[in-house]
Length: 162
Image 1 (cartoon, rainbow, N blue to C red):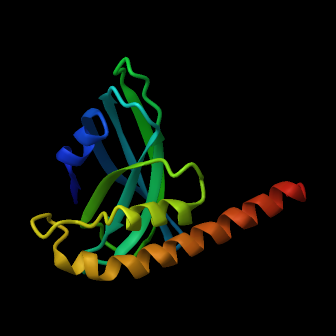
Image 2: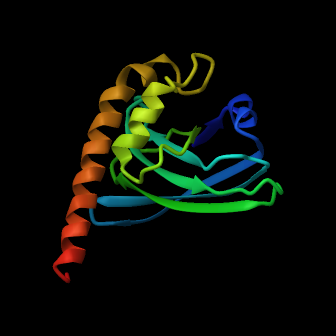
Image 3: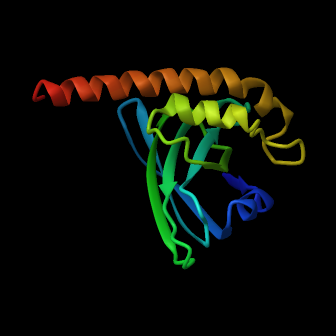
């Protein structure tokens, strides 16, 4: 599995270093978990999101998540970890890491909108290749809808004591 990120873009937002690693955890039923961990340093002036998009061998996005980066101007290290649900039958080929300004909401549709607004797409020289950018907008939309449905379900369960 390859991990790619754009250092030039990261520097524009004030990140000096970004280290990312990933490993697949054990399978549970029809689902697998991908653990993404790492750290970053930098003197950023705004809250950023690290968006992790996971692709299979066919260039289809099979999972995604994001982590908020709060770094003060001192440039201290910020560690992050996230677990991404993946279909068990899919092999992970690429993890694309994008840095975007925090849209100010935890709703995934806002994150997706911000990605589209910034037109963040893997470039043709990335390992992701052109086929990723062709299938990605629909996959992002589907992921956002699924994420919002799960979020609404969790809120309902919290409100009703379940």
